Amino acid sequence: MKTDTASRTAQYMALFRALETNRPSGKRLFTDPYAFSFLTARFKIITQLSVVPFIRNLVYRIIRKRIPGALSSGVARTRYIDELLQQAVRDGAKQVVILGAGYDTRALRLGFLRALPVIEIDHPATARAKRERILKSLGHMPDHVRYLEIDFNEQKLEQLAAAEQIDLSRPTVFIWEGVSNYLSHEAVASTFAFMGSFAAGSYIIFTYVDEKVLRYPAAFFGGEKLLHDLRQIEENWTFGLEPILVRRYLDDFGMELLEDYSAVEYRNRYLPERTEKGYEFYRVAFALKR
Image 1: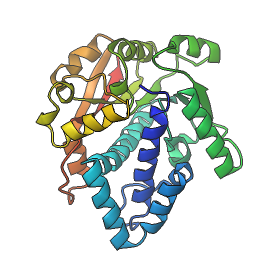
Image 2: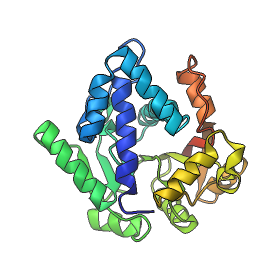
Image 3: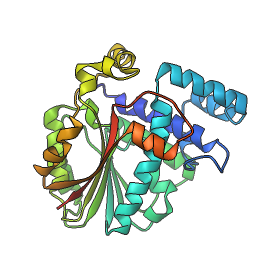
């Protein structure tokens, strides 16, 4: 994984959220007024022009051709994780930890999080860029959010937690989105072990890819092209799980699997009118620390 991978991935997700925010209010899945501030100049122009329906449809077609399924999967996944997060808070989570936060803006845009401590942990380059843009956008840093830095492949979360006095006894909801597929098996297991060290009643929301896409990408629409494009920019995917084995995998960390849906399922839930194919190998799982 290249050191700027998180930033690049975060940039595309911010673009998707900004485009969704520009859709008519009755049709959009969420509103993210902060996504625009994280975009490059080129993506800002694209987003501004997308208020025109013809241009918006053209932008959608270009994205679908370049990364089949990524846009619809990404915005549906955002809405789904928002709802899982709200459910976890309603069920007793007292703090939020976002691992590999990228340009995630949930701490700013979701009102129900403003009364909770939110801890964002990310690669130093991405974390610093994010702080700079938030400060420029808001004029101040939010009081309820802490922005911590770590390289997931090189450093231990336990050491960071001890140094920053993160409260492991407090029921916590974790969001770990768009990260595990770039890590080693050891780094993924270490991260689950860290989350498993928190109090019973904690929740884990995480994404992963079906490991079959790594072995046989042609089994999924757009899989071969995506993995080829990732190799070209040296951002290879290195980790996946077999969906049928996820429950057993989590059990080793004292976690109970509650939900595990593919992009097909959450896209059908939130965007039933879109028949777009692609990204079927991407999944969101929701687990409870026993």
